[in-house]
Image (cartoon, rainbow over all chains, first blue to last red; front, top):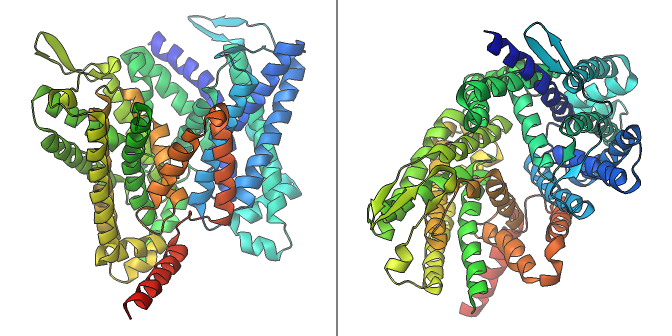
Length: 299
Length: 303
């Protein structure tokens, strides 16, 4: 029982990093109704930029974080302009394939920045671990969890309490109606990408700082973990992203503990596959699916 | 032709088959991230059939294709009722599940004092059909292109038939197709089945060409590359995917000095191309005007 609970705690802690990644995916999907496959690689490029500065100039970790954010935002805006803004809205496949080829491009650029397989990455604080009875947690993960919770509240506030949030929701609801109201959809989508890139860069920094190293596989890892977490929680739902991320973390740690390393990812994909068959909208996003299913039934 | 060129050309042929299978689903308006699963299933099944059970290549290939097709139909029947991105992610989840299962799949028999068969993460060694039958790599390349040509011819024939028209109609607007009395789910599952068969046959060729396969070959990058090639070549005609593959593997592989920067060049090129031609090089409109042009030229000659 203690093991099970400790696994749950570990899962929630690791899951908070997945939740942060899923948050970025879900915002972009909510606004654009398209999938941005190169979200992970933009974060990786930012992290490689930060790691390069750290390696060559040995700068303060806070400056590394800042550099990560700046590079990620630049890469994110590049992706938005090239793969999303320039391509018409009604061809969703094209944006996805376009973002995939840009992923390949960003990955190769990142490899040219840091040719080593792994590079060191500086943490913000020295690592501590807390113990409470039989359980223990690491401070990095606790911090990540706090950041994830704070990020959800911040995004919720931005979406529902600011003019930018109102415009964003208007574009997400009906782009044509939003255009008639004088909203510049292109600008809104750039701002959305900037917001998402900042979130992604913070998430990426925290994850890599917990590992203290960065590899070229991080782009793939971040894209897939974020995607799975988003689908589990429900596409386009903010609380869904958090719940999906935490759920993914718990599934992984439990299957790792009870079945071994080979079955860790297998269990996650199995749960995702079954979830998509039984309840495609995920935990929180069923409304969107139901609406379409109703429209189909009426025909 | 030296060994290097034969390898590159064989690769183009085999990757074209997975691109074709992704293309067929794209025509039906579905994006599959999981065609590599059927490619992998085809490779393993046909490898087991020829290397362990002593079947000839053709029956092994047919078995690989059929098992790939039935797996694809099974997954399609489960997941095609959910449309759009949900289907894409479901196929991705299935393909990754298959790949991770191959890591723990062990089935070996002793042949000639040596263990042969899939051995989890150590891969599947000794698919020696081409050595046992004295087939050179050049000859095997012709086998690959023979299969590819018949698949492309079959697909071009299908596209001009009623079936192909229904696939395109579903791809344009599945709601409208349903109003016309088309059973959308049935035809989508059929498309997934054909696509699975093509991918399975491609995988069988792959296993016999490389003689060694491991789960890592069939990761998501293979499937997404296939998908990208399908779109780059164009959704108008079945040889479009071949053009997509030839541009990346053929053209960019050939330019030596670009080696370390190949993906930077290819990625930028394709991203810009997709802005102007969002449905690929040979999209429906361009293919139609090319065909009209050809017909006029032929017509002028005969008259």
